[in-house]
Length: 181
Image (cartoon, rainbow, N blue to C red; front, side, top):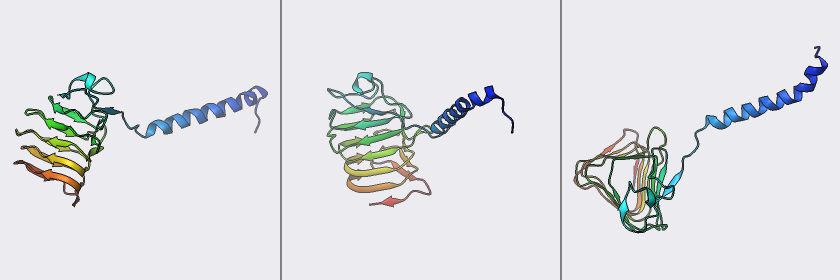
C-alpha cells in the first residue's frame, strides 16, 4: 500500500487521537457512582437544611445520604425525598424520622444503592406516607420502625442484628426479594 510522506508523518498522531477518543467512550459507558453526602448537623435539624450536609445541599436522586459519627444529631425528613441510597453506620446514635406527609424513595432510576443500617434509629411516618426502597434493605444494628403507610421493597431484606418493627403499615416485597434473618 502506498502512503505519501506527509500522511506517514501524521499517522502516529492519528493513532494516538483514536486511542484517546476510544478510551473516553469506554470510560463514560459505565455510570459513575454519585457523591456521598454526610449529615454534619450540630443540632437536631431538618433534612432540607443545606448547611446540615457535607456537600452544602441535601442529597439528590443519585447521592447516598450517610449518617455516621460525623454527627449524631437527629434528622427530620421534612419534605418528600428521592435519594440513591441511605447508609446509617454503627457510629450514628441519633434518630432519622420520616415526617408525616413526606414520601421517601431510596433508590431511583439514577442510582439504587438501597438502605443499610448498622446503628442509630430510623422512625417511619406515623401517617400513611410511603417508604420505598428500590434495592436491598440490610439491618445489622440500630432500630428500624417502618412507616404506618406502605413499605415497598424491591431488593433483598436482611435482618442480621438490630430491631425491626413493622408499625401498623403494610410491608410489600417484590416477587424476587429474598428475606434473611
